[in-house]
Length: 226
Ligand SMILES: [Fe+2]
Image (cartoon, rainbow, N blue to C red):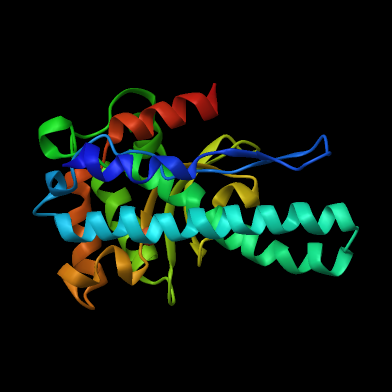
């Protein structure tokens, strides 16, 4: 069933070359998940996962690709006002694609390692910065629950200070725009939890640790800090 669902997403990936021009538009596509939609239950329902992946992420991908193609046309015409006007759509939809692509990898079913505590250098860094894994989880949940409106909670790596930190971003802003490296992102747009948790965002943030793929977070930390 998942394969069938993902096949329907695949054709959105393509490279369109403007006729007679050397430039090309590099479009993006929704990446496949490493697990089935229902495998994160009971923490995240299959219905939420299907809608989130097939509809919401797809909408960001479509919006980003459309904006890129419009940008190509505006650049060809030297239409500076149009180029500038497109930046908001590119940032919002491109950020949505970046953030969700990380989010899917940051999650794993419990039967596939989801919820298994981190180890090695990341575990040591969490202990050093926050005192313990539980203290980190509490601070992350409190900070992320306080996001006003829609946004994301992040564990990120600062390449300038070589420290990890908790931060949040509004809307679909990626932390990479601040010079930080994203390690773990948790989506707190209502579309990520409302069908199951209603308005109780803290309950979603309390439960999600059971499906966090710490192995993926460890890999991102190792790559960022090496
Ligand atoms: Fe989302």
